[in-house]
Image (cartoon, rainbow over all chains, first blue to last red; front, side, top):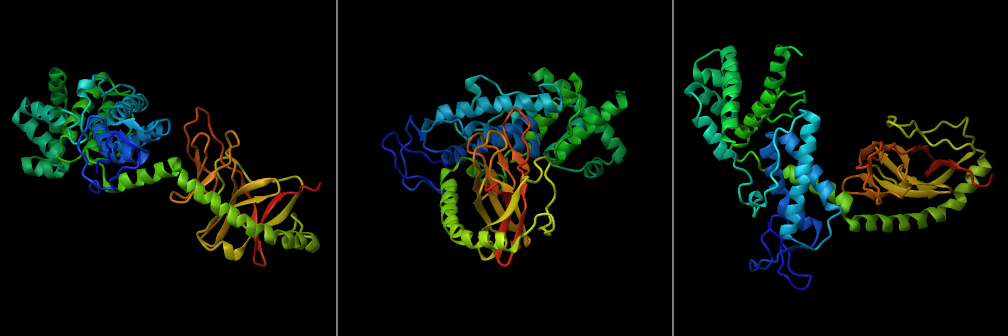
Length: 192
Length: 234
C-alpha cells in the first residue's frame, strides 16, 4: 500500500489503492511523496491509530483524523520526504487533539508527545504503548476488578453479559465496574 | 454540580467509550480526567480497534479529493464551456419568449423553493426577469449544471424531479465556486469552504461565520429552464 519512489526523476511507478507497487523499489533513505494521494494512503492508518489510542472511541477518532488531513494537506508543499510529512502530520494531530480536549472535557486528558523518539518510524509499528500499559494496569488490580474491566473493555461484553459471567446482579456489576475504574485510574497515574 | 450527577457524567462517558459511541462532553474534574485516561488506555488495547474502517478511509479520500483535486475542477470547467455554448444558442429565442409573452414576476407561479438554508435567502432583484439558461432535456434527474445569466452565475440541480438553483459565488470573498462531482458539493478555490447544492455551508476553516449561498428562483416553461435574474437593460 506504500507508494514511494526512489530519489530521482519524477514519473516513477506508483502503487494503486491497496495494491503492491508496480515495480519493486529498493528501500532507500530518501523516500518522497509526490502528491496528496500518496501522503493520504500511506498515513491514514497511522493518524487514525494514533487518534484512537488517544480518544478511545471511533466517532471522535474519525472526526479528529478528518480534521488533521483537512488542515494539513492543503498547505503541504510536495514533493516532500516521508519523514518531514509524518512529523508535520503528527504536529498537526497534536494541536487538533489538544483542541478536542479543550472543547469536550475542559482538560488535557491525553496528549501527543513532542519527543521525536516516540514518533513511530513506520506506519506498521505500534503507535502507542496502550496494550502494554493496559496489561500493567490490569495486573495491578484485585481479581474481581481485573475481571470486570477485562470483560467490558477488552472482550466488549455488555454490563448484563459481564454480570452473568461473574455471577452477580447487573446493579452490582455497575458498582464493581465503577470502583474498578477508580482503582485503575490510580494505578495508571502511578505508572506514568 | 452534585456528586451524583458528576458520577453519572463520568459513568456515561466510559460506557460510550466501551460501546464506541461518541461520548458526550461535560466539565471534568481532575479525578474524572484520570478515569477517562485509564478507560482510553484499556479501550485502545482491544485488539484491532484502532484500525480505520475501509468505509471511513474511502469517504475521507472522497472528501479530500473534492477539496484538493484540480482535475475535478478542470472537468467541471470544460462541462461549463460546452454547456454555455448550448445555452447561448438557446438564449436568443428565450429572450424573445420572455419579452413577447410578457411574463410577470408578481403573477407567475414559480417552482416551490426547497427547505430554507440557515442564511442566504433567495435572490430578489428589484427589477428581475426570467432568463432561459438550459433546456429541460439537458437537465435529467440528478444532473447539476453551471449557468451564467446576465449578472448572476450559479448552479442548477434537478433532484427528485424538482429544480433548484443557487448562486455560484462564495459568500466569503466572492470567488467563483467549482462543482466537485464526486462529493456533489460546491467548493471555493480561495479558502476551501464547501457548500451543499441547496446553499447551506458544509465546511470551512474561516475564523468568522459564513453565510449560506443565496438561492435563485428557477422554473420550467415549455421545455426551457429559466432563472429569475436582474434585468440588465434598466
